[in-house]
Length: 314
Image (tube, rainbow, N blue to C red; front, side):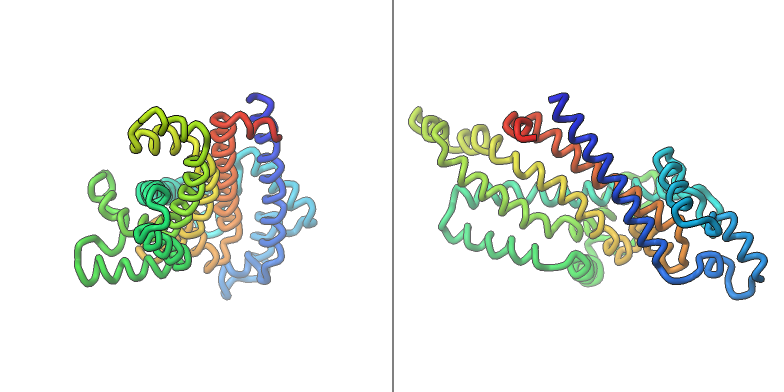
């Protein structure tokens, strides 16, 4: 397990390094002068040049990347253009709100997807299996921003059951959870279909395994066979899918934070792009990239711990 963990960790570090290179290249190729955008049209050329020097834009591109690479690994993402605050501090202030949204979305997908997958595997071929199959494909096909808009219109505007915008009163956990229901549903609904289909496929395979047939021969209850013996094995591929799903939810969170006017990293990146605040864009995207890779690393380690066959393949 130690060798497997070290290999996965080394691979994660390599992926982060490549992601940093690609991110820097994309930001560098964006047209426009960050100094001119930050200072506005009334700034003099001397003021623009001073800001370029402060941001390190006067140096060769390879030096800019090297400084960015070294500083980023040390946790220094630079200062944002508008307020001169540390980018890392600004991003970390918004990160808890985005993480709460991701956890809420994953809670929706797990709470609905796993039971639906188990149920349809047990009832395969029946009407319930067909209905859930159509539902799974439908929710996968609908974009998260469409779900967010319709959820807002139905539950907030028409029915007035849930609040429309905001993240709730600071310090009031109950109010924050109520404000989290609709955004997290918009983020997690699409992954209900993915998880349901994955669990169903895995369950169908496991239910035909010899040890399951042996358990049935001994007369064990179907509920015990399904949830104690079959699901514990069938859930392993879903753990990996959850790691990928959390990363995808990070992108879906951008739309949810904009539609529901919630604070978060996605809304922060959107506003930073509009103002050409390149250091803030770079830092926020890098943090979310590292978070995505870290989540997948944890998922891989969990699967490797639960299934020794995975460790032997690497």
